[in-house]
Image (tube, rainbow, N blue to C red; front, side):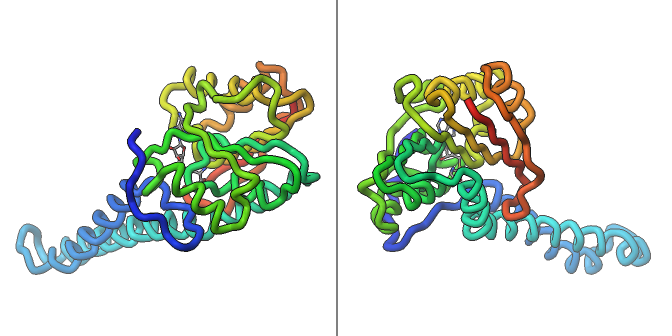
Amino acid sequence: MAESTTAIPAHADYGLDAPGVVRTLAILGILCVVGAFLWPRLSFTSPTIQHIAVHPTLLWMGCGFLAGSGLMIASSRWGKLRARDNLLDRFQLTGSETVLDVGCGHGLLLIGAAKRLTTGKAIGVDLWSQVDQKDNSSAAAMANAQEEGVADRVDVRDGDMRALPLDDSSVDLVLSCLAIHNVSGSEERRKAIREIVRVLKPGGRVGIIDISNVGEYADELRKAGMTSVSTHGITPWIYPPTRVLTAIK
Ligand SMILES: C[S@@+](CC[C@H](N)C(=O)[O-])C[C@H]1O[C@@H](n2cnc3c(N)ncnc32)[C@H](O)[C@@H]1O
């Protein structure tokens, strides 16, 4: 997809996920709340039905849509940073590792990992979908790396996770957050998982956060010979709810 030409902000901005969904939920919420207050003035139904059924139903639906939209914004802006740090804490990096962020977007995991590296390198791969993340581009990811003071340890590459632009057995840790579910079709997602296994060194580790298909990823990791494949409960910091998957090659 085409890169965004939007101006790069002067502070690290890790992007808004699924902007179209956030916008749709907000519009539906506003329409329902406005409708709840306008409906009693229209005489389609009897006053009793209006007050007992239509008004509260529209109001609750509106509040639900608006809450969903707000939670998605809060998740992109703050929750994901907490989930990112919790994920990285699991791996106790020594600082010399090569870390890959699959579907890095604005560089959330990429830069979080780079901050924990000394001699190592953090590589991000993405095809910069504007549907999956607002104002998505390699320039935005690199600007965030610059802003966070880790640009010398960060390498951002254009690529599709189903054909990663990396050598076999070249990475110590593969991370991915809310990215793999964007690939349509089970076989295509499984291809992405096999690519992750291909680029991992023997003994290399993987940490994936995603909203769906985590069982499918676990199954493919096991088939590809990964060990200690574990799914960890729901992550409270991200909306919609996500699960974490870890494994070792
Ligand atoms: C919801 S965003 C998450 C970005 C980042 N991981 C984060 O958590 O902020 C999903 C990312 O996956 C990327 N993506 C989707 N399909 C991809 C593919 N086939 N190969 C590489 N990246 C992909 C999108 O461009 C987008 O940057």
